[in-house]
Length: 253
Length: 329
Image 1 (cartoon, rainbow over the protein chains, first blue to last red):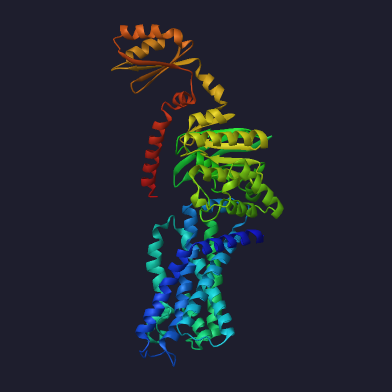
Image 2: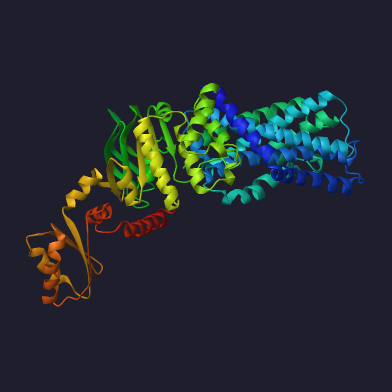
C-alpha cells in the first residue's frame, strides 16, 4: 500500500527545491529573526509578570521557533496550490501511486524543511545569547518541532484542498495564521490573558507546541511537557488524517 | 485489439454538460484525434480517461482496464502530455524525468538508460542538466513528450501538443509524434483544434462539438463525404433567391450560406464556375470573389456544424460563461 520510492522522490523534490530557493529561505527566516531581535531588545529589560525568573529573550526564543514552524509548515501544506497552479499536481496525480503515499511524501518533505528552518532559528538565537543547557534539550525540541510541523502541514493541506486558486492565501495568512500565532503564547505568558481568551488559546495547537518547546529548552512551561506532547501528538494525527482525507477528495484539474 | 473503449460517457460540472454521451473506440497502434473548438469537451474527455476526473456516468476502458475500478493499472499503462506545462521549473530536465521514472517504480539502471534514450529522441540531450525555467516553450513541450514516454506506456495522451508553438517547432513535434506511433507502436490519442494538425497526423478523427461527437472517420473519408470540389462565392447583398436557384441545379450537391459567403459543393468545380457566374448576373447578384478548392477538414467542420471552428469557439466561451454565471461557479 505504501509506496516508499514515491515518498522518497517526493521528499527529494522538496529538498532540492528548498536548497535552490535561497530567497525563500531567507524570506521565511527574516520575519522570525526580526521579531526576535526587536521584541527581544525592546522588551528585554521589562519585567513581565508570569515569566518566572528568565529574561525575555529566553522566554521569547521558543515562541519564535514555534512561529517559524507555524509559518513554514502552513506554507508547505498550502503549496499544493502552487503545484496545481503550475500544473505539476497533475503529473503527480496521474502517476500510479496511491494518495496516501503522496500525502506522506509531501508531509515528509515539508516537515524536514520546516525543522531545518526551526533549527536554523535556534542556532541564530544561540549566537544572540540564548543558552541551550544540554544536547537532549535540543533533541526534544526537534521532536516538538516535528509535531508542530505535521499539524500545520495537515491544516495547510485542508485549506489547499478546499481552495481553487492562490487568491485566498493572503486571507488565510491574516485570519488563520496570525491569530494562531498570537494566541499561542509565543510572545507573552498565557497567564496574562483574560480567562475567555485563554479558553480560545487552549484549542490552538501551537499553544502546546510553544509551551512544550519552552519546557524542554528553558525548563518553564504552563502545562507539563508530557501533557503538551500528548495533546500535540493528538492534534498532528488528526490534522494529517484530515489533510490526507480532503486532499484525496479534491480534484487535481 | 482495442486500446480505448468509451461508452456513453457523460460529464457534468454543476449542471453544465461538458461531455454529452460520447462513445468511440481506438484500436491498438492507432493515432486517433479528437478535433474540436476550445471548450468542446476534448480536455475533459482526456482528463476522465487518464483518471484525473470522475465521469458523471458511462463506462470507459483504457488498455483493457476499467477507468473507474482499476485506476492504478490505467495509470501504469498511460503516458500523458497536458495542455498546459506540468513541469517543475525549479528542477532540471533530467530531474523532472527522474522524478517521473521513480514515481512509476522504474529501477535505477533502467531509469538511467531510458532517460538517456528519450532525451535523445526529443533532441534535448545537451539540455538535460539545465533548469526547466530556462527552457523555451518548444523545449518544455519536447521534454514533456519525453517524460510521457519514459515508462513505455501502451497509450499516450497528447492534449493540444502544439498549442502556442511556432510553425517550425510544430512541424518538429508532428514528426516526433509520427515517429513514436510508427516506430514504437504506441497508441496515441491527441486533441487539437488545428485542422491541419489533425489532417496531417491522425489515422482517424472524431469531430467533437458541444460535448458531442458529430462525425468520426478517417480524414480522407470525412472530406470525401462532402464530395468533389468546393466553390466559394463572396457575394453582395441579398443572395437568397440566387441560392435557391443554384440549389435546383443537378450538379450541385449542396449550398450553404455563411455571412456573405456561399459554399457550393459540386463535381468538377473548374468547369462549373462560368455557369454559376452567369446565373448570378441573371439574378442581379454581384460576385465579389470566387475560389475553388478541395474540401479540407475546415469545410468538414463547417458542413457538420454550420459554423467555422473559430466562430464555434467564440460561441462556446459564451455558453460556458453563461452557465457559470447561472450556477455561480
